[in-house]
Image (cartoon, rainbow, N blue to C red; front, side, top):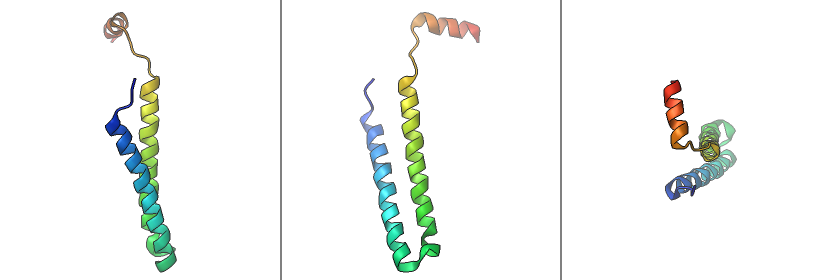
Length: 79
């Protein structure tokens, strides 16, 4: 199963956007202090965690086995 290019692009953009916001947060910490730039770090961490969730979900979808026609019919009867 080949990865979707749009999904990969979104993941790459999320990772780089998170890193960019972290760099902005460091700059704001140096100029204004940590108290005034705390929210920037929280946005960066939230984006990074969202990236990790997307990555784990993609890996889980790749590892789930696909069912053949007979198995699908069996599962439909059991429900």
